[in-house]
Length: 501
Ligand SMILES: Nc1ncnc2c1ncn2[C@@H]1O[C@H](COP(=O)(O)OP(=O)(O)O)[C@@H](O)[C@H]1O
Ligand SMILES: [Mg+2]
Image (cartoon, rainbow, N blue to C red; front, top):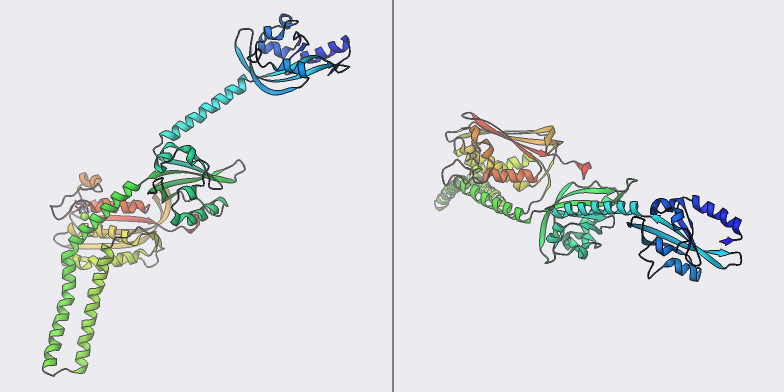
């Protein structure tokens, strides 16, 4: 800037004075030569109070003593841009400011002073402070959450993880952030598959599964089973930029559930033993009779081809029946990993009948099946649903000590309310004409170890296992009972919805 003469100087001063930003100028001796209105407003000093005073005697800054940039500008002619400092106002209060200084030159390019423009940062600092407070608060919420919370960007890198997440994984936050989630936490055997799903999700080809269970690997190489709830994160334009998930560590719960399943399985096998023995005994007895007969005729040399053939065929049929019963039993007693696949519920009902049908008929109970033939497939674990049906059917049998009717009906149910949403389902009704359930017992029925049966007959785990199984399938159980007249258990299981995957 060149200042030609007094008139020009005054003209310039007028412009500076009315400029929007806060500014002042000094001469070579650091005496204030201009002090504009905006500067007056912020500092509380009047122009008259500061003109001709050395700048550092009035506008005391934290940089005055050691690192005065104005001085440097005066000495070197260099401009200094956008540095932060604090100034004291007239009342002695510190104001955070952003400063730019530049030299003022005469027509022959000599430095004759300097200009300082300063911006009040109070408001910006306050905003920043409140943002930080908000962020801290949010982080506090995250850290008290008793579930794992993780956010991934579209590359699958971890951008946020809360305290519980660090605990479960066994790492510090700074060791986790920035890592690829799948390489870092997902067990190798399922890594590629999960990555593929994530890539599809990011490409928008897939809707996020709101709930699923899978394992993660912690620092000690131990697998923890996590139940996840997920949502996709989008930017302002609606593009998918990542995922946010909350996950509950259900490893222990899964273990107890597996324990429960196992013990209830043993209990129902115990209850079945007599019936099964009887069922296998009958064909065996038949076989024995035929064999004795054939042996006798053979010894007497009286075997007749046609008759012998028929009898051998009968033996074969009876043996097949035995091996079918034994196979069913083995299938049922086998420990199996939960696996969901599309299944026709009627097949489960038939399989259950083939195991316990005979046991039921021994108790003088008539059974009836009304199976709808056009049911959609449902995504279930065959063995577990079979166990659930069996538990309910055994209870029904035990509720009819003097005989009665047991009916199973399958049907399609549209728009069933399950867990807040309404979906199409398959319905299974299991009814008995037994003693019924007194009102006061209704809400205790599904609690573990609640039993009204004498020792040896019941341990009170059957219905709690049923409840666990149906819950895991995101289904619903309803119950109607008339004391003295009978009980109906209705199970609803959601139909596979292809689109929603
Ligand atoms: N169909 C039914 N009719 C009457 N009572 C039932 C029926 N099903 C279950 N209950 C009651 O619920 C209780 C709990 O059942 P469950 O959990 O299977 O345990 P358990 O059969 O070992 O007693 C039973 O003891 C019985 O009182
Ligand atoms: Mg039971």
